Amino acid sequence: MTNKNYAIIGIFATILLWTTYIIMSNLRPEYNLFHKAISELGSLDAPNKWAWNIFGYILPGVLIGVYSFGLFNNISTRQGSKLPLIGFVLSGLLMSLSGVFPADMDNRTSTTTQLHMVGSFGSYIFFLVGAFTYPKQMKKSEYWKKSIKPTLIFTWLTIIFGSWPFIFTSYPSVGQRIVFFFYLMWIFYTAIKLYKQPETK
Image (cartoon, one colour):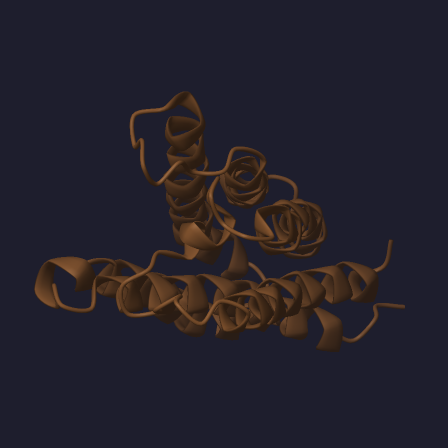
């Protein structure tokens, strides 16, 4: 596939996830974005849970994993560390895992809930691995060098807003949305950048 093909996959992954979130959350009048976790859209007792888990977690996760190969092959000199590739591939696949195993909100110790949490937290941890190791690769490219600052800003903002539930205890789930937003902004921004990159002769 070409760079533009991979870029479209990355862009589509972010749009698909957020579009699914907007649709699914609006289909449930009782769903409060200030207090309800994103995972509750696909929990075992949620209406249309598989619609969310497939189009909100599984498919976007697979697409992010595929996009990761295109981004890495474009940025990497093939001589440096593969941690950026490993980080984002696993981040995407673990996101998909969290959709395969819906959370049981009434039994947080159940196997399906534990596997869901492994997928959710694992996806974020490996995102950090990839996001913090990419700048070393980007420094080697004149085209990607300018992307170091914005991508690091997105990454640090996910960490900063990750502490939201401990500070704003009345609205714990808002921070989760913001973390998700900047995670997807990292993907979206780099995908746009990849799409706009001039083709080499």
